[in-house]
Amino acid sequence: MKTMNWGTKIFLTLAVFMLCIVGAGIYMVSHDSDSLEEDDYYEQGLNYDQAYEKKQNVLIMKESPTIEIRQDTLYIHFVSKENKGKLLFRKPSDNRLDKELPFQTTSNLYTLPISTFDKGMWNLYIDWKSVGKDFLFEEHILF
Image (cartoon, rainbow, N blue to C red; front, side, top):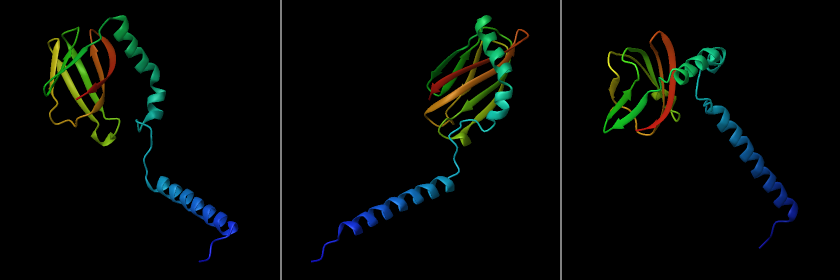
């Protein structure tokens, strides 16, 4: 039985290492997935001041809504009665499941059935107008 000499072992080790590096490179290039959650992060960066002002309005005017999940229904309790805006549901693990829903209330409570949503972690953004001001509230929720 013939054994390999140390030169052959070094050569084979380097060849396997190089194949692993090339394979990883090909895998990374062929799978077009970006770790950024937002596709339009440049536009959002330009509009950051407006979003910051909306978030500050929530704090200053104490208009922070409370979120509650019971069974298959999402309950949003607003401070004011007249609210109009949109709900943005962002799924961090799969942006194809993101949803944007318009809403309007004439009472403090807004209900939304969530039985069709995938289970797991969601980022909820509530962008609404009430009492003549714009507000933005965000919360991480688990269905």
